[in-house]
Structure formats: C-alpha cells, structure tokens
Length: 210
Image: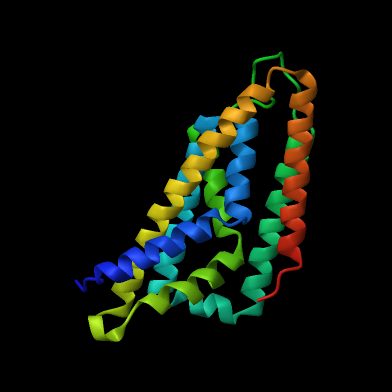
C-alpha cells in the first residue's frame, strides 16, 4: 500500500478543511436541516453526506467519474434529479407546521431519513463528481505507487475533514435553531427561510455547467 508523505497529508487536510468551510450546497444543507430539524438530525445528515463522498471517491479512484464527467447526458440527468429533490425539500419546508413554543418547527427526522437525505443530496449533485475529479489526482503521484489507491486514501482524508467541519456546523446551527423554537413567529420564519435556501440551491444547480 503506497504511503502518502506526512507533508502531503497535512497539506491536503488543510485544503479540505478550508473547502469544507467555504459556502457550498453541502454545508448549507447541514446548517438548514440542523436548524429546522435539530442537532441529531443534522449529524445524521452529515453522515449521509460523507457516505456519498465515499461513493464519489471510489468513482474517481476507479475511473468511473471521468466517464460521467465526459457525458453531457449523465451530467444533465444528475443535475435535474438534484434540483427536483431540492425543490421537493423546499415545498416541504414551506408547508411545515408551526408547533408549540419550545418544540421543533418541523417533525424530527428518523436517523434513516436524515442519513438518506444526506446521501441523496450529495450523490445527485454532479458538481461534486467534477470537484473530486479535479482535486484528488493533484495530490497523487505515480512515483509513490498506485494512483488509484492514493486517490482513495486522499478521499478518506477529505471525508474526515468534511465530517469534522460539517458536524461543528450541525451543532452550532442546531443550537441556534433550538433557541428560535421559543416563538411561533420564529418557527415560521425558520421554515420559510429554509425553503428559500433550498430553492436557491436548486436554481444554482440548474444553471450550472460542466
């Protein structure tokens, strides 16, 4: 098994942390779901997103991602599926009932529901495939052995960094959301804001290009 030098691992981990902190669909999804559905649901969403990243990592390491990236049809299908899913979430958030003060603005998700939302969110975004395809090979070298295996380990490092940052965001957003549940007006505002965020993410995905 080829070992990546410590300086490469540390440098890549730092890049992964910065990229995970920068505004994007995944961390916005974590923040929104955590604020409206609670910390527990948010952490399961994070696990779902990381599960999706494992699939993307394997796709890049095995060369499947390059085939998807080269296909305009595959890119379009994934883009439309992702946008449709986000609009479905937006509709649900807009219509979410307002509960008594101190309760969640919307019913809490089961672990499986939250995890599956994270997986679907990640896998239905074709930009993630292109992002991993552009990023991971830059830190691999044929001089160190199997590039595919190096790519796999780099993907795991990225997932660890993303999981750490996303979990912190879930805890922070979930705590703020819990405080907002004290007011019915705040609950309604939280629901509507989440809906707008999902619509914005769907629109951005629809106009994205390869």
